[in-house]
Length: 361
Ligand SMILES: Cc1cc2nc3c(=O)[nH]c(=O)nc-3n(C[C@H](O)[C@H](O)[C@H](O)COP(=O)(O)O)c2cc1C
Image 1 (cartoon, helix red, strand yellow):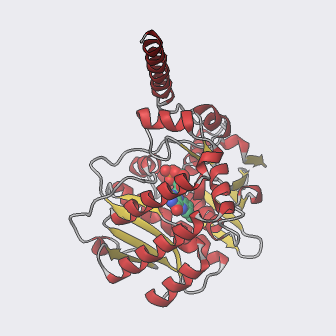
Image 2: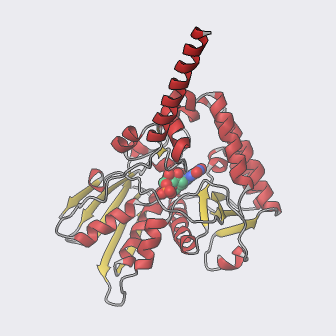
Image 3: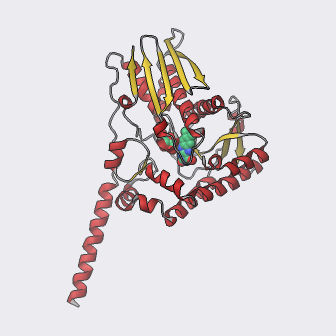
């Protein structure tokens, strides 16, 4: 009896210790504030920080930037070391992420009264942004606010009370398909097929796990990839994730089955999908998809409509071909959209600008 009592006491203490540790580990991640890159030009420094808040697949932040501040030009290239070699062999998402970064930068320049011109070179895959202070523009702090607030929402989303098709009239090369429509079902079915195929691929799972950050310490050291906070976890859920999760568990079949279930939930709970059309899938067209993605995302952020890109369907060639046949157009990206009770905020989890921005004359 005494031994059983001791045993239960030890178990009780261990369980309590586990939950206390999980609670401590569940505290929100503290990210470092924006660093001052160019002390003499606070505005340019701010613009480069705002640009860093751009979306990118797996939060790889795969940009390499050179600022020529005497000639008012910024050169942006893809950092090949950060491209997803398994899920993005053809650099499809890398080019979209590059376009997204450039458009976030263009919006940040606009917020500070600068006009820009963007040139993208199909051969070198280099983007060039020229900027000048435009006396016709005044500062637009609402736009800055939208850049700071925009984020990927992995929660269940609800339908919107108005017609999203009407709202999106001004955007070309996109199509909204409402939940329940034929096009919605085509995208839903192919996305489920794609995610099942991807989660059965060891190399895909290993690559995804290598971009996951399993503790705040690792997250703070790397400042990229997907950490508990950006995966939408908080409190005890985050604590348990950070206490128990390892790369081994993240690649196990139990975890990948759970992820498929979560994916299904996300696809089912939304107002609908928006797909991006690209008749000719050139590098420039993918770069433009990234630019349209951010323009649209910032517009929806101002309306507090949540967005989550769902790229599995474009990562599996057979599913992408099926989409093209059934929707009658080549699709470069799909996002799901919808409402929540509170829009939420960006976790501002980003690399230091100084780590990838080079200052030239
Ligand atoms: C091309 C592209 C593909 C993406 N694919 C997915 C996806 O399949 N699922 C998802 O949850 N987020 C996806 N994202 C969102 C990124 O994970 C997200 O932008 C990044 O983690 C930074 O987080 P933030 O958008 O909240 O700032 C994608 C983003 C881009 C640009």
